[in-house]
Length: 114
Image 1 (cartoon, one colour):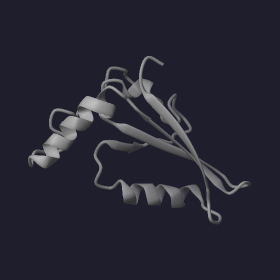
Image 2: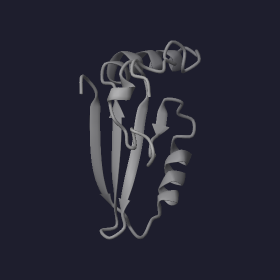
Image 3: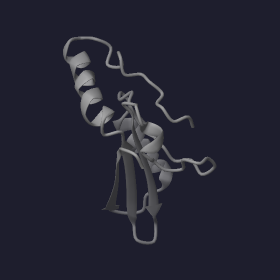
Image 4: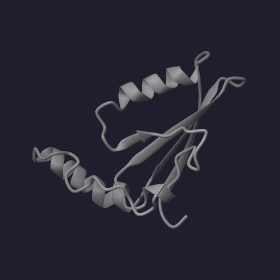
């Protein structure tokens, strides 16, 4: 890993929750956030969030896995700490504060092709 931040969070669920319930909650919460992507794909190379494909982007990828036996969810997130973590975040806030399109100057697919 050249750069980026990868975090893992373990949380207990109050009861049983299916993947679809967690998907709905995340999709609802991040509905208006153009730079947040939900990642969970069982068939491709990047099944969970990983910093490498985010290099040079302002995206934050979030993924999860449930553990029904222990009634918990494991949430993973990844960002490029040089773009989303600093400069890109500042530009995104500037755009919002000054009435510009939130994505102006930030909508870039990244350096690493998927």
